[in-house]
Length: 304
Length: 302
Image (tube, rainbow over the protein chains, first blue to last red):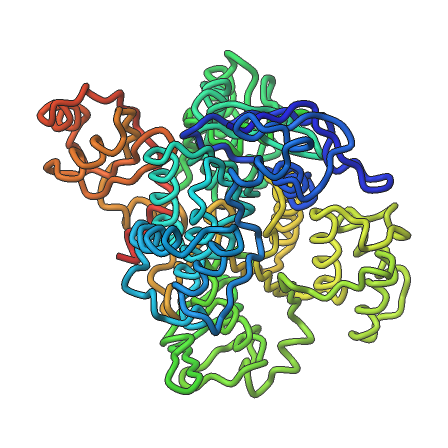
């Protein structure tokens, strides 16, 4: 559905996007993960056709964005980071506005709007002014507006920044259903790993490039057996000693514990060395165990 | 006995009919890193503003660094640093010019002190960089430098690493751990679970109320009512229905290409497999998952 190859975009001397290739299939949720300034939003703007790439090809549902821009855009629903709603219009009027903007006729937009409001759980609020909605409801309205043209491709720029975890949970349940039930290709951006871990596939982005890509479970599996959690004893001392042990590649404090990344096959010897360095003392026994790697561990293990 | 740096007792703030902070009680000891976790609008920033003496409590009181936070707010502010998420950095000034400007607000004019602060946050060598050209991680460090220039004993960080990737966040937290090691007390607000994991203790806030406060490990152990499983099953929706109604299952949610299940302790994989098979589905592939602070939040919020 989304096919981008070798995209590059510079602004003056800043290489915002460098040789980025990605593809997203129907029904798939792809997360572009990285810092502000990593190139995520620029990539999204290239895909949506708002910016022209210096190099590379983009095809959306088979339409070349450069030569068939209008057809390509007709397939896309886009929710930008700061999407604007008309606060003094009702929920229904807001969606209608987006629908008419996209050229839907009255006999088309009304049933669709009602259908989408039902789907996102806003039916009961269709006469309410947008300004009187909670943050989570505004977000659902933004999503509903992006969905009104029945896009085959949905692009979301940091869709859940700043919302309540309960609302975020609801939003994701909705998103997963949209992708699955309507066969929509979803591409979203996020700087956060707990968000990334819910995607089918993720691309880790830094300095305009995709550094690694894959399914969260596969990316994590590559570090299986290499992440240890250690606690006990005075943490600064534990940290210093741990860093000196052979096979320890990285030591990261985490509240009252440490996470260690060790070289392949070194977990047992590192645990033994830790126990030697910190013989069990009353009150502060050392605990060290293998833990399942997280996506954060994966990101940190990437070359700088 | 370690010194108590923050003591909030029934701290409450109302704005008209709206109670932004509702009888919040907690204390923080010297050198601790305490996180305040909650969504936007839950009362985190209002709490900090009361602790800094910028807002008068409607009820209750707070003692900060031994001073009454409201009546002796100047004493508090002279000894506390505050890094706000939307800190006004001057984009068209250099790093050093920004720091010089804010140092001047505290009456600091010595170049040596400014250089030490730049060293501390790892911005030496970037003094002449224009602030607008800084990457997100470096902007954050500059905002931290400004909060630290007067050597506070207590540091309030409001959403300090929003928008930065794990590598920059980790570098930032290394600085914070360094400061805490020297005895600086840190109170961090965040709405992201990833960030809260870095704190020694975490308070969970929702709708103005502090629902719980403890170490991340203790919160997971005490609040989450069961064990976490990741169930790979197709089709997802049917799996969701089947497991939602299974005996002993406390919560099921969609999570990318699998289901995340919280089940009663000791329920075991076999019961989950049977529940799926009873609905005519292929038995799911099951893996134990790690509990997260998000699970804690969802368990407390419902």
